[in-house]
Amino acid sequence: MLNHNCVVVYRSKSGFTKRYAQWISEELKCDLLQGKKVSVADLQKYDIILYGGGLYAIGLNGIKLITKNFNELKNKKLFVFGVGATPVRSETTQEVMNANIPSQQQGKIEFFYLRGGFDYKKLSPMNKLLMYLLKIKLKKAKDPDADSRGMLASYTHPVDFVKRKNIEQIINRIRSVSNDES
Image 1 (cartoon, rainbow, N blue to C red):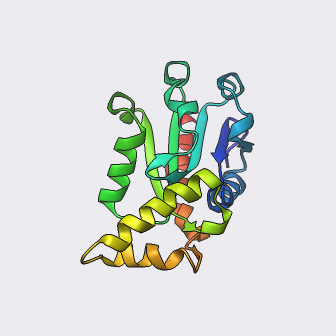
Image 2 (cartoon, one colour):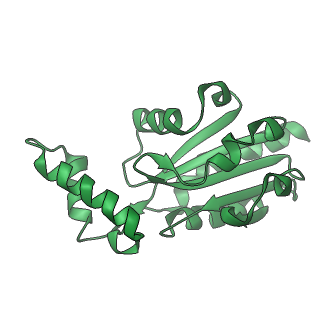
């Protein structure tokens, strides 16, 4: 069991990341903080920091809290999870990590990808515009793959792939790190 040397920080626009963050916090019995309200100074009291954010056009919402403050946090155990609608595959996980975590930080920040969902109606006007442009691109594809067809369908039929069992790998990894410190 962890004590309060661990924190889960999250940024969530449509609720998928928030659910994962709450479950992780419950499982690890650690603090839960909403990312918009957190500063690097707030994180200094923790030994283990887990940051989660939703993906928007492969960009991880709020990740700069960790990457821009890396020098202040590099002596902590750092974990990041991204939540997106795309199925979990090793190439997807690698692509998202490479797009959001600088290569020199990747050895120090462990990254996980969790499948979330997509609800067009919950997006901000700017994100709706970006996703509308993606929709146009997807519709123009001559031979769309299953992921593209599924994404197109989700514009009118929201999808939710969030499952509590998806956090097991994260929980096990953080528990192993915590046990190493004991």
